[in-house]
Amino acid sequence: MSAPAMGTRKTAHTDSSNKKKKGPGTLAIAYLVIYNVVMTAGWLVIAVGLVRAYLARGSYHGLYYSIEKPLKFFQTGALLEILHCAVGIVPSSVVLTGFQVMSRVFLTWAVTHSVREVQSEDSVLLFVVAWTVTEIIRYSFYTFSLLNHLPYLIKWARYTFFVVLYPMGVAGELLTIYAALPYVQKTGLYSITLPNNYNFSFDYHTFLILVMISYIPLFPQLYFHMIRQRKKVLGHVEEYSKVE
Amino acid sequence: MKHYEVEILDAKTKDKLCFLDKVEPNATIGEIKSMFHKSHPQWYPARQSIRLDPKGKSLKDEDVLQHLPVGTTATFYFRDLGAQISWVTVFLTEYAGPLLIYLMFYFRVPFIYAPKYDFTTSKHWVVHLACMCHSFHYVKRLLETLFVHRFSHGTMPLRNIFKNCTYYWGFAAWMAYYINHPLYTPPIYGEQQIRLALIVFLFCQIGNFSIHIALRNLRPPGSKTRKIPYPTKNPFTWIFLLVSCPNYTYELGSWLGFTLMTQCLPVAAFTLVGFIQMTVWAKGKHRSYLKEFRDYPTLRSPILPFIL
Image (cartoon, rainbow over all chains, first blue to last red; front, side, top):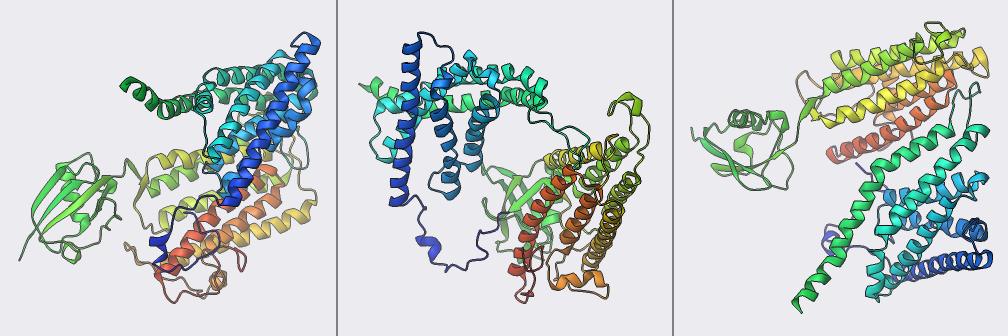
């Protein structure tokens, strides 16, 4: 039931037979290559920052502070990916991409940044490491794909590492939200109580609990989708090796 | 009289599902569906989609066999539309919910608010007014469903009733919770605001009803004809000059009135979501009108005069 974006356009009947599937133009590809290179570099900076801070301190406590700014910058920058889908230069679903990016941004800003007391939790390191490794692989995968030079190693890594990284990230995220709960309840963070002029209320503490619960139906679906993708993308290579 | 033979194949598997011989040339698709139903009792006519082409459009119940581009042995393809439910049933269920749910909050039935408020009444008269308006709105909708509307389709997919009821019942509970809350704050501009809101609300209720009557009168009883609606002697229908779907325009107006009356954010949210959905429907309807009628008035917009 979607109306055409710019009213009723009258196209000649012959156009429909000549219409090719519209993909990204050369300019769009150049932009996307730059975008993905920058993002790969950004997450490498975060990875290096984590390693250096660990070596300097000798422990893995409180490493969040050493990469706080680049983490916020590059994770928030991923919002552009929603735009890429909306504009059509990336063939993914706007809703799916939006959902994935927003959940990352939510954890970065609405939980970790907003509740200072959780920033020193080990669970934060758990998801930051998971995100860092995942994103370095993912953005280099896109970069090489766009340049039509995808090394098998990167493809393999993209469709294999998630098996461990995804549960690791989810564990880190859930533990962090859980750790934030008592502070949110105590301070009434982001909550609105009655009475007020707009006759509306919002309890952030309850909201966070509902977010945690939502992982239960969502995580298995996304995880098994990736497993199916893995079979599809990597599956046929095993057949070739059998022939030999 | 030359009789037809009709064979019905599954659109996906192409299996032969049914063979009918000695079918009258003037038999309708509706009658053929009834015959098919006899041999396959689980597929009642409402859930049958009969087409000439496996991937083509469904034929209408009124289509006559001899007027279709088929030989004396006609081949049709069948697709199962899934369990169906009548539009009337869906409408009655989705509207009865908000009516009853709102009243439960209004009367402060136990387990909603703190026990000391059970069965108490609000001290703000706007809360009583809001209850009357909300209830009136849904009673009107129920009565229109029973006595006014003439539906093009008899049924819709069964899953729609769950989706629709969640929407209507959920929002009704959310709004009613705050309006009837012991800590409810009445509108900032007091009586002036409430009076204006009530005028807007009533005006749009009458307007919406007038449009429903005008649309009903376009269509003789039991028929599914489509005609261009035009303004009638009723001034509330003069909006047809500027808008294709003024029923949605008035519906938006009613809820804007209710939002102003209650000054409640969830009501504003419900109004916004409803507006978005009605705009999608209005644009679709407007496009259908333009496609079907060469002489469709060009001044009309789908839902908001000159704007949308």
